[in-house]
Length: 302
Image 1 (cartoon, rainbow, N blue to C red):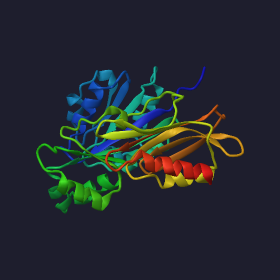
Image 2: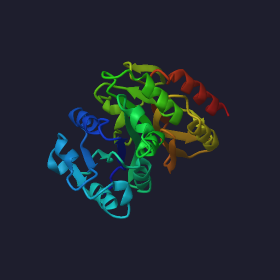
Image 3: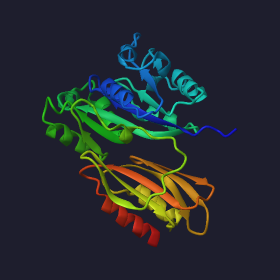
Image 4: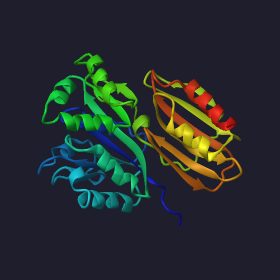
């Protein structure tokens, strides 16, 4: 019996009222066949957020006894173990952090678990209120930490307030890709990962556009890279690139499974596949697939 594939984990962060529950409900309604398990951490004794989720009870885990990032030694790890023990294992785990949580601490718990695949911190920023909460001496530091910890930022309520001011506040604190949305309705493929162990054997697609929000790039072929060249590419990715994953043949033999989520990269040695296969996704307008194509070519030539 083969071991189950690593469980993709996404942390959804954002201050109170930014739209986290709305985003997760959107993901649940548009799961595309994925089995999504949601871990909800409401700050307080009554977990209101869990009651607002449009999901069956068996698809929601709740932590109601305070902020999850303040009790990493207990309930969070039990909940992560529960998710991993489920059969069939869910396709994705989405952790909705409380509005006052430090998302990076939760992310570190997922990164430390070898059976989990880190898919990033997605921070929601309220275009209406972000300026006032950042200026508040009591909560400003928490909100700023949520922004700086993000791998992807979603600006919500852009139908209620011009997002220019929010984008300026974000730009000061983060270089993460940014999506501007009205009701936290973001394409699930950006936020969620799929668990397929192989990638489609397609040719290079440098300008494959999926609408106005994001663009993809992919390569399948004989290219080999040195491990050092691949590390340099992942450590200095093109602007707007949010996620990259695939199997890369190495010079001199061998291969790695490569993942990039925001600023976090992992390389794991694997049995050598028949070809290098890599897919990437970035946020429009900053991400230009041609930039990645040039860097890929430079990496294969070094």
